[in-house]
Image: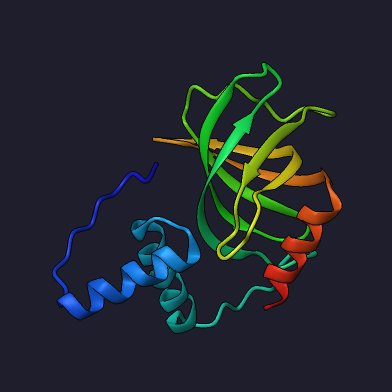
Length: 156
């Protein structure tokens, strides 16, 4: 789902360590590497002057999701970041969804180290399209288990 491919050489020891994390977290090796790079960049980036405008801070991640729009068709997507109030989602450009008053999108995805997948209902707030469609979404409904799992993941 990403639009840039990066290849690099590494030691056998590092490759095995990354594969072990991938197995433990139940994520792809690419997702593990991407999350590690996001963490590194976030920790080493210069401090921002502007204040965060969101009510809940978002946490970067990269996990696959099943996305169902108003048309009922299931698409593959990628959750790019998440908070208690919303998330950012990448979907193929053929995913037909416009930000509307009561329009809802259903997502099913698993957080790293989560035992069960989460199911959430979201409302699109903004949509940007280039090689993929990126949607800023507000969480509007979820079951207790999903919300509790999300809350525990974000607090850590």
